[in-house]
Image 1: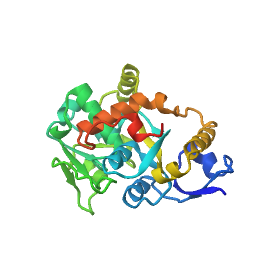
Image 2 (image 1 turned 45 degrees about the horizontal axis):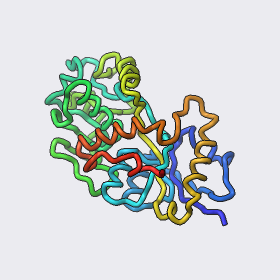
Image 3 (image 1 turned 60 degrees about the vertical axis):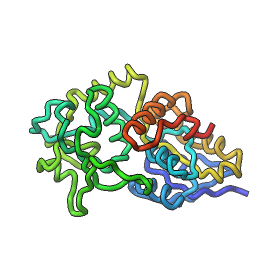
Image 4 (image 1 turned 90 degrees about the vertical axis):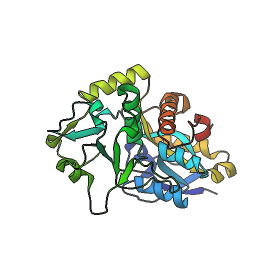
Length: 280
């Protein structure tokens, strides 16, 4: 009998062949649920365990582990990238660089958003700017309901918008805001792409954002499932140019660094080991 998994995956080209059925299995099938944006599925998974297989931000997964959610990740990277350029300000802002963020207000979708975790870690490690040296202005809470934001994080009202607040000067900078005219903003870190590439070469880290998680009960009941899912996800990835490497060892440096950043920022109680989070 074929195992059918209720599944939420985003629009990454890395899973297109899996979603259109051109990559398939006689052991497992997928009941795909359309969730747009896919970040909304993270909340539904951690709060209601709604899916058997789900794309999830790595920080969300680590927080889920902290609160005992029975899910484990596959070493499959569906979203990754360098994030120095995601920290933006108004084109005419007086900010001259990261050091000027001290005492300022910075917008981000949520304190727990993985891009923000990466950026705050970089700000602390590379520029000596601690996360609590500024006020973080957010639109929503963490996907994991039990987590409470620290006191230097503020929530905007439902009728407010971070994009409007950035352009009006109500906040001084923001992280990963889509839908803004590039002519109206600039990066806080000068020559951000080149700086990010140099940082990646020096650290050996290419940041991870999204992985894939599976319910623990299914992994325990079907011992073959993790290997079969990896086979399918690797096959779906193959036609995609520039796809990131899958597997533990290829991603260990990024996982370890993100866990350190998340622990330093109070998102998780301590840095989880790779084996705490991923199938072995």
